[in-house]
Image 1: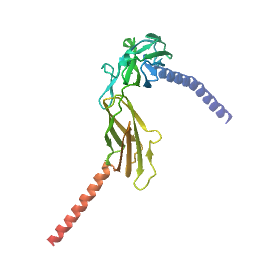
Image 2 (image 1 turned 90 degrees about the vertical axis):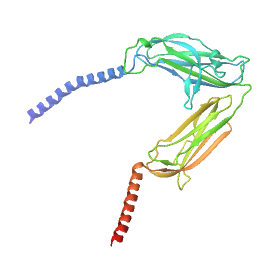
Image 3 (image 1 turned 45 degrees about the horizontal axis):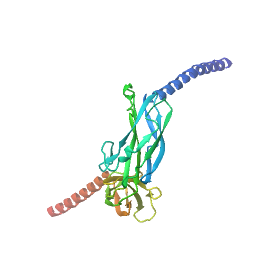
Image 4 (image 1 turned 60 degrees about the vertical axis):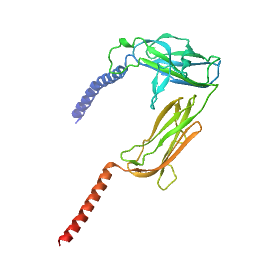
Length: 312
């Protein structure tokens, strides 16, 4: 027995000695793999925007943001300025179209126009905005654009490299301003065949300053006033630029597969407010098919019975 125990102990020790280097190799391989997952060239900026809110002609505003290298290779970048506007109800950005609302791109300067940032490090850019004394009232929106200079020389890594990022700056200049909005749509579906439950809206800004639209959703059971879902404490918000329409949708992520609920959505922009409440029936498609099949079979059975009685 002692010999067998010694042999077993020796076998376990040998396996342990072999396992330790194997485990070390596995760990080092996984670490190397994790490092290799990073693309060669990747750039981030933080924060992504600066809401200047209210501006006055003659104002001087300053701020800063960082350009971070989250790739494995060093890169250089340059800084320039572009106008900013949006197109369509989904607010696709446009960095080329010049309007009365994006003159601010000509009012901005930075302390850095070119720089190199090493892997894992960041560079801070300080910017200054000088509002002209004769600036007209209304929205102003522009972008400080950061462009990676040597991204075109990278090798394929399986990741899409970000070559250009923008820092959005916007605000309302005091003066001759107007606030005018319309809630064009406030939609709640009546029947949901496949969750999730989604409400939507469309708002329009007919003024010359930006506004913040707020969207509040409350969902109640059919016979109760106790909310099963609400975003009242943190209603969803969207910036709405002048002379634009913006679509918004809110989804109840935990929608059950069956039920009847009272759904209320409140949409507000400036002094305009729309409140819609509606009964929503949540029923899966397969259940509708089953119910229709049962009805069909019941009708078929009744017709068959009537026909058989007539034959008798």
